[in-house]
Image (spheres, one colour):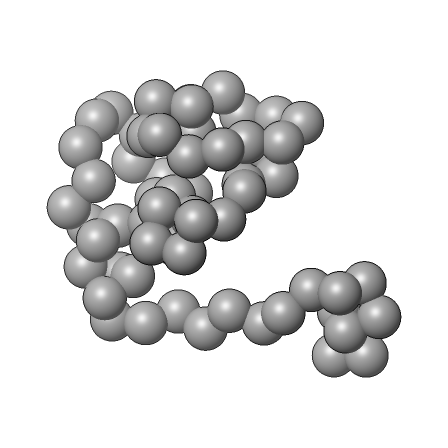
Length: 65
């Protein structure tokens, strides 16, 4: 898996306590904990979220797809 990730030019992103705390403080009705973590990391690190789910748009993150 690591080699496939590296071959595609992606980098591993660890989950930190700060990410979890930010996810827990996010406002709004979206309660899926994994999505909230993705939102928090995208906000913190300026990342693009790859998802068809338009709920991400309400959190000020860039979404592809």
